[in-house]
Image (tube, rainbow, N blue to C red; front, side):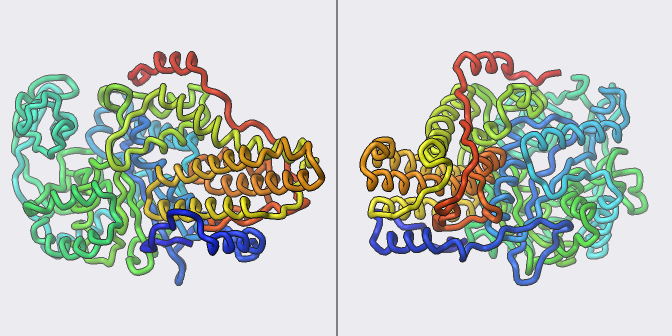
Length: 608
């Protein structure tokens, strides 16, 4: 099978050698298929195997995730983790809610609840949404745990013992009306760099630059709109310049490997180009991981320092042998999934934290960041309530797998993309209904209606081996793209295979052959038998993208056990005499009137 570093699969006319190999693999390759991975918890690294640890950026607990959040983090990571298991790799996928910080305190005040009650409420809401979207975590945890406190404080003490911490005063914005220091995201004002009037206190959405809240022009409290005042407070800083040589040494090994998304490499190089500066790691809050150092015990860790440690503590809540994953860089390959605005914290700041702690931590090998998914003519925004949110999707009567398909079809891998209701309808009706669904339903109904539901004998001829070789190229391309986390291109190869299948049926016209001689009828049997096996392969390739549809196809095929392994050759899993189940249409047409109603219903406002 194709693996990282191998050449791109063949192009140009299919060669005689490809046809010979394709025929051999189809007829005799089943015995060489590896067995599927069986998930037995707790999943731990295994010596001599490829051990893959996958994380998606921890969603803020106090907001409902929108479609952009879902594709940027949890869904992309879910597709890749499912592929890894099909690939036979020993894989652990963890995520959880990020629960500490001012945002939680503020939401608790708004709703008349305690911060813990807010976290409990919204953690359950997140879990329900991801469950509906078929996100298959091995463990979905949270950061408000004793393990978080223990691990974060241990890392803090290791940094302190190695003199990587500094003390300095900070000018902070205090809202006198609310009687609280304002976290960066609860201050808005005019960007000092580009004059955008709605810049946040930590970053400007328009120019993308990180900013300091006290440098905002005309700052205003996001809670009450009053003008905050500047007040000085003493805080602890992580001495990033001191750790920078270690970071640069690590980045020099990682970045040339092309194992990070392009935007992650660009953003990281931009951050380190002008040298790093000390970064504050404490905040004057009550809801957070307490700072254990004398003189600072009334403060908590700043969320940027604390939240990435949640990956470790969530794994520790999953298994007490968490260090086998997180202190094992020689045997574990770590993938981080996130949107591009999270890159600097995962590529620079958090690695500095772990490098400075000097405890053999596993550092990210593959940092996969998406661009932004926009909504119709604007942007998704939690704070402004623009766009379709996760709990809205299930109210549309559109199945989760259709949402998964479209979000992955428009996944913003190299540039910003846009969610569009009209485009969702077009892609669903053309690619799913008329291409993929049409091919599988036609193939299976031919078997049921003309061969008593039994796979007929297949005597492969030249056009068949040509088809097999073309399908094998697509299978190789699927592996090539998926191993490089090119999820959109992986989906394209699936649709290419079903398109080849439709063309093959049209070219061979089995409905005509069935009316001819006995030899013609036998030829029709070869065509539909081969198509049924293509449908079987498609069910496996679809599993990472559309798991429910994958299961439906395999049920209709009465597919044998042990099927869910990714191969780079089409193998005959459904041999002559195999009895299939009852075929049913996989998709129903999305009508324009329905889509227009949905567009009006979800016109960019988060429901109350």
